[in-house]
Every structure is written in structure tokens, then in C-alpha cells.
Image 1: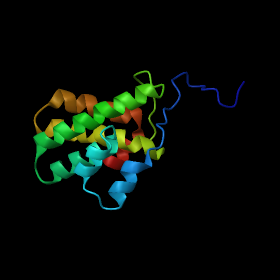
Image 2: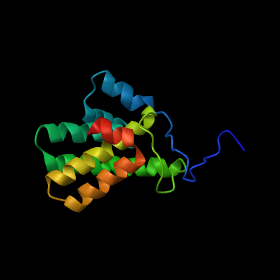
Image 3: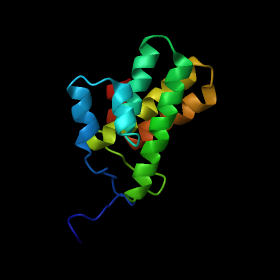
Image 4: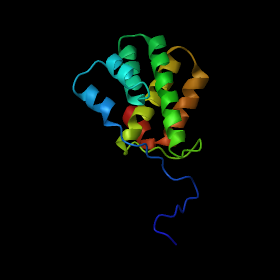
Length: 137
């Protein structure tokens, strides 16, 4: 038996490759809109735009940003072996942009009355990363 064998029978965790550019730009104070323009495939940039819009009461705008980040994240996950389910650990920092976008999509969906989508996205977040669900609320 291999030490890396998955005894639970589920798919292995997906770990997205590191892309420090967007994270470094945001950390240095760059405007999220500039980060998204420079790195349009970055779920992190879109998640930050979604969070900022939600904080200022723009739920529809937040929803649009979150949906973009969510779909960019799904694309990245699929390119990295994800088959539509399985763990996407919060503990692996490059996964956090996708998980934040997923959380933001659930939150915005609830705010605009899309209860079914809110429930689906909330469950997807819990299934992908219980830690992310707890940390993000």
C-alpha cells in the first residue's frame, strides 16, 4: 500500500498552481479593478471586486463579479485535474481565490433572492472545503 493512497475512496485534493502576481498586486494596494484587468483569469481579483461591491451595498454588481471569479476558478480547477467534485483545500493558498469567489457568489445570490443558487453554492463550498466555509462564514 502506497503512503499516498486515498483510503476514503474519493478524489484527491486539487491544488491550483501558485500565481503570485494578483496576490502581490492586491497586497501592495493596487485597485482590484486594475488587478482584474491585468490578470483576468484570477479568481482572487474577481473575488475582491465582489467583496468590495457587496460591502458598498451593490449586490447585483457583487453577484456579477463573483460569478466571473467562480467560472474562472472552475476553469482553473478543471485544467488541474478536478473532475467536478472533491476537496479544494483552503489551506492551499492558491485555492483561496476560487473559494472566496464561490462564497461571494452564494452571499450575493442570497442577497438578490436566488435562494436555490445560494443553497447550491453554500453546499458546494462546504463540500469543497469545510475550513473555507467556516473561515468565510
